[in-house]
Length: 79
Image (cartoon, rainbow, N blue to C red; front, side, top):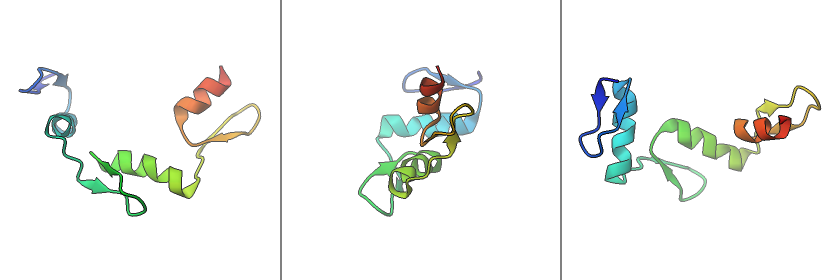
């Protein structure tokens, strides 16, 4: 892991992951939700959050067809 954070020493494989991590130290959240006051470090977090507003449930149980908004909720259900 060649990319190391100078603030905390955490290492990353990719420069982009280090750059995103740096926002945690700066408290910087440049991506705003257009539907509420919440802000996020990156577009992936924003897209994940927007499911709250849209009701999208993209993760479907292969056994009973229930759908979930988050992968970890589906995984917990399947166990």
